[in-house]
Length: 461
Image (cartoon, rainbow, N blue to C red; front, side, top):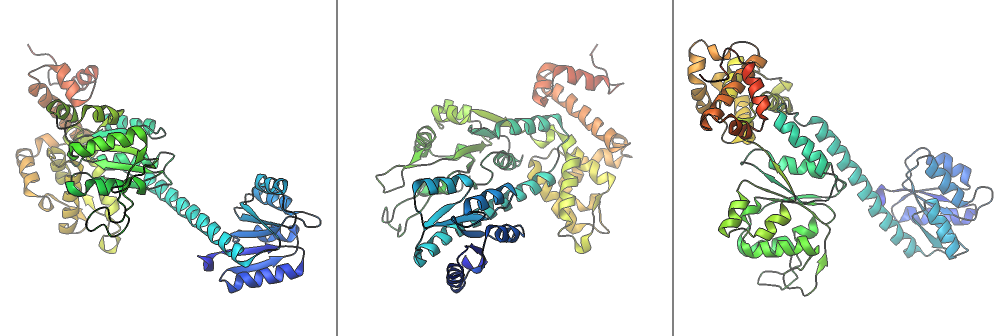
């Protein structure tokens, strides 16, 4: 994009400055010139020069010294050096000083323009990566902060595995946020400036899977009228997120295992392998271990993927996260709300949300809030704005004076937590150790929570 680049020509010879600046202007660049290093540094401090074409041999401050001082001042301008004394030593000195490249006098117009186009591409990528990193910071700042110990543990696991290059697999029911966890791993990794490529393995027709994953050459099959890059090459240097990995057919599982082991792919119709550098994060709502036993999922691929497992519990097992999620969804809704209206939840509506079992997990909760925002009046979401399946389950407690839901939000959450513990104990036939394991808490924590819930007895007679 030549028209967007500002170029500064630095040379002590007036004729070279004039001719070069004129040539660059005619080619569509924004070009200006200065006669020595001091003027160059003064101009560069304004921070809007993308590329400096600088002579190495100049009286006073030479070109290499200009580069060194500019870099020490934190100036991000890319330097392209000129010299009439071409030598390996000169090139090495320029590159060590921080120059991008150098040209030999006499200069050729086509060489200069070609080199500037290359540098323009580098600048565009640099700016794109900076924008992506800023976006990641914004998303990190604005993301939902969970209250439950189980989700805090998951956040700790994400922070541990993200800086590594290990393959990770995220398990859990549909709608629990497996894709969000995968994206957070990518955003906190060294690959965060590269692409995060999500793919739902269950949405690709089986006869197209190999081409979608590994690409194809022109003429590989009927309809292949052009080269296709494929998901692995698209995600090269970045992260490929394989959602619903349990839906992969056995034939493709073999090929995926090869990629994980050999770090190379072969496009359909090609005889050549191509190296790829891709981090794999997989996710599934199925029991892969059970699938390996039934022969529908390869055991060797399972062990290769299951290097680092993160299991996300369903929302019904961490109801203390519901208020945080509701607040997050309501705050994000302000962008689309008429007049910037700030919505809030009526206490009865909030209690109903806490009392519901959420089979669709976070995805269902988000849909319920979005629906309620459409129906709500005067910025308040009430019971009447919630689906009947939620208000029906809340039913008895809300209809009889709401005896279960009295008190502050903290009190209500504690009541629901205790109810969840009793339900888990009942499901475990009274085995509190099993109940604690099901709830994802320690046995001592279970007893402590029950003690705080007096007068509910801890020990049966």
